[in-house]
Amino acid sequence: MCARLSPERFPVCFLYSMRIITFAPKLKKEMKPIKSVRFFRFCVLGAFFMGITIAGGPLDAQISERVYASDSRIDPARKGELSVEIDNLSFFKDDEYQGSFMKGYTLPGLWLQAKAVYYPLSNLKLEAGVHALRFWGANKYPSMAYQDMATWKGEQYQKGFHVLPWFRAQLALSEHVDIVLGSLYGAANHRLIEPLYNPELNLTADPEMGLQVLYTSRRFDLDVWVNWESFIFREDVHQEAFTVGLSSRYKLNEPTAPFHFYVPLQLLAQHRGGEIDTIATNSVQTLTNGALGVGAVWNAGYKWLKRVNVEVDVAGYYQQKGQLWPFDKGYGVYAEAFADLADFRVKAGYWRCHRFISLFGSPFYGAVSMRDEGQTFDNPSMVHVGAEYSRELAKGFSLGIDVDLYAHLPATLHGTDREGQRSGSATSFSAGIYLRVNPSFLIKKF
Image (spheres, rainbow, N blue to C red):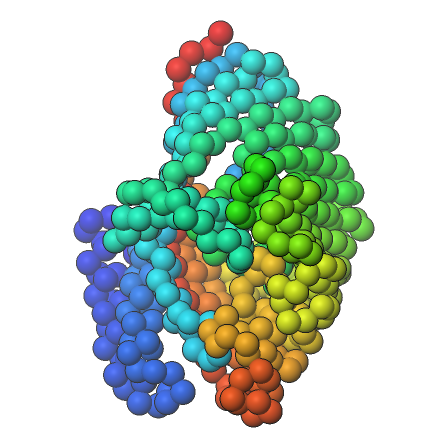
């Protein structure tokens, strides 16, 4: 309909979107479980994003790979280069959540990294600069780490932007092994399943900082890291906290084969406390998540169907020390599938768990409510469907759009005045648009 997003074609696509919006009042009368205001907002956002997608032409739907992830490869040909790099992700994401798991919210903002990049050796890359996070309409930001510091909220604040220093030293020991010190290749680069890591953290979390080892070969990929979230000095009034992670994939055959099979193994362990922790006696906490699965890929290679991916994982949770969460151990089963079609990706998933709690995943993948304090669920389950689009506009520039629908199935409630009652089914949805801009400007080659 509209081959490219251009000034003369955009009005047609926008009008097409508005035609969809006009049906919202008729539809919302028939969809009583969903609040009319939330549903109407979703229709407006969905139609707007659809209009942009149609105007943008054919896309390759890989938001995690094209928009969120960063290229971790060292280019030996850049030896002696000094350049300035701008890395920016602008986003607008609306989460309309229902049910007892969590409340909805909207994320309008951006993060921006400005850094100098220098290759003193063909196998050594140094980067230094700043990382800044901004939510439109906010003017005050806590100075804490924006990633699961549940028992420490911080007392220091920043004005205007949430700003952190940014530094990375990366050394390629061989063709297969890289060591990273400082700011890590985190978030989407770890390739964690959604029950272990919420993709939304690509927008809001601080850069992971610490130590990372990357290994890539024909049959095996390995990512091992330590993310140091909270450092303490003597007499500090908060805990030391760090997360150890492992994400690996054993490839049973060539990824380019018509039918490819693989085995993923993922582990996350967060430790809070420290030998000089002065908060209280026995305040140490150690929490662990893990997942083991099997996956299959059909590389169809057709113009309208590129590939189909199916994966099943068994996830586990273990509170080895401490009493931060109400359960000490639990498990869940996660089945997901997606198909890359001519111009987008469609995806579906099913989740069911027993006393499972995720360190960095969405509360949807757990048995504890983040909305009603003290409330837990007995064997909750959920069905998820969605569609996403992404396109690499040029080297260093990419666009992503996604729409997701979550159907929460009934479960028995515990821990509140609704003890023993069954929760009703609920439908949550979200829609987002993301633009990644990552240009590089050569200053000098020594």
